[in-house]
Image (cartoon, rainbow, N blue to C red):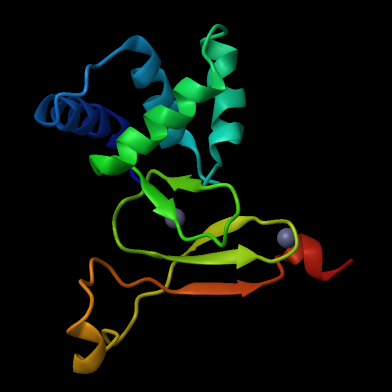
Amino acid sequence: MKENSIDSSTAIFNERCREHNLKITPQRAAIYRELLKAKDHPSADMLYKRVKKRVPNISFDTVYRTLLSFSEIGLTDVVEGYGEPKRFDPNTYVHHHFRCMKCGKIKDLKIALKEDIEIPEEIRKDIIVIRKRIIIEGFCKDCKIR
Ligand SMILES: [Zn+2]
Ligand SMILES: [Zn+2]
């Protein structure tokens, strides 16, 4: 993300909230700001702890529900998980992830897929494809040496 992207993201935030009749409250704005800064695909709990430093009276429930609202209006993505706590991603553009199977770290993978993933017709007829993402799983450099 570029340095000036925070400003344009605030504009996007205001616009999306207005479009979807989500009231812009100081708490929601604080949650969004903290989410935007996050590079680690935080869970609601991780974000709650960060937002709480700025907004001490905020509750976990507010943070969690707000993140779900954000994901409904396209302000955040939810990273694919396997029954783990949801992880949120401020980068809503198509990109791929590496997930450490030991510590749960999720990192963006800066790879461009050369070819689009073909979904066979027999599968496509039963589902609606919204996006295609790749998750590479394994051990991060901190975990592999242990
Ligand atoms: Zn790890
Ligand atoms: Zn990501």
